Image: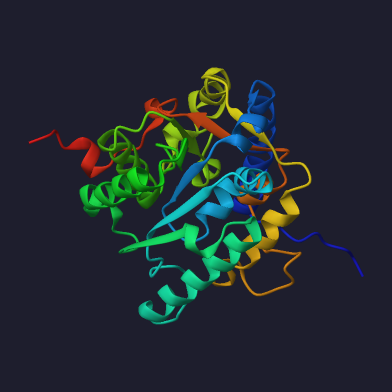
Length: 290
């Protein structure tokens, strides 16, 4: 019997190559970063998450370190999570399930139920409620008085994440917040460092070679040491069963760029505004003030 190799899916091979390149470029970028582990642990904070599970994907390590030394943490989930895929539950039921999942996940991270707040804005529609979201967040900032606010990066690429970033920064200004505003990353890792070409089929040398080099030189990331804490993060993520499945909690089925992130030595943040030059076009950003 003659052995014949099976043809490999070119798209899968390309995706694997891109993930390996992205992981290598992330490693190089973080080598230029500044370690803020100690200061991060000591700063009370408000985590603003677009959806249930973003708090765990983006900020778990920082939250664990804060709670380990008794630092107050408040987590705000902006959307109701009702449009999650591939879940087939009725929206009202899904909202209840995802809230329960989030409380359990936050408990794993060390955050008590009274410090997990749900704003309940419609999932996938946050861009149409910026002012209302900002108003609610400003109230929470005034009430909780955090030293630090953690918000999604401005160029996440996901409309709800970008809207949450804009609403949170608007809220910080309205509340006259004078503490530290930092941006965390979730969907960012699905397109960085080819950010400018995200959503296109551009295969030019500029996009594939020169743009990634520019990304590595555009400022230093802020790093929180994740060593010894990723397994706890994975256990917290496993509580979001509607998003990651119901398998063994030690084997969360997260794949692709997020898997590389969960294996990284550091959780990555940037100073507020550091990535604005990479922002994605959005209707509320393109419309001049009236």
